[in-house]
Length: 244
Ligand code: SF4
Image (cartoon, rainbow, N blue to C red):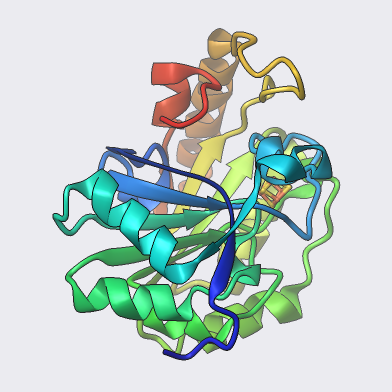
């Protein structure tokens, strides 16, 4: 056990369902979504794990309780566990990962790469998702590189970039050029994310598909043959519904 703080701030634990995006798309997964984020992206699709308005829904759960929940959901069969948020990098996951991997489970972290933790090297997959200009956030590339270094070349590391417009696309290309050895996954942004108090409002699927088509055209026109373009499968299947 490597953590001094044995509790994790949890927004929700759910699954198994399929991973809806990026390198693990389609893979059955149990999700641990943590509460709290150092960012506030303009189009955040997980505000219930970010906005302090939802703080009453978050729970400080001991590692053991989090683990029992994961085991219960998976029926005790090892499954991919996705640590998402919010920004799960700010939580003390080391002991949980150590325990889970000892039982055959695998762990993927989804983070914007703004906060480093010493347990990154214990992951199986590190998904770094720097936020493009449309998010209205600014990337700290030094912190981002520190995240890669902390992984010590142990987990698989991939870049995942949300693209809404031309400047996001240019940002994605720049990010890929900065880290040429990392596989790149691009996905069209959802401009109809869940809104506070109106989580069930429909998504503009036609608009998202049009952006996907535009993105495919951009990548092929530019002969950016290393990039992979994927939709958010869960948005196509379930819109903005939580817990799937
Ligand atoms: S980093 Fe992710 S969870 Fe945090 S505000 Fe941005 S989109 Fe939301």
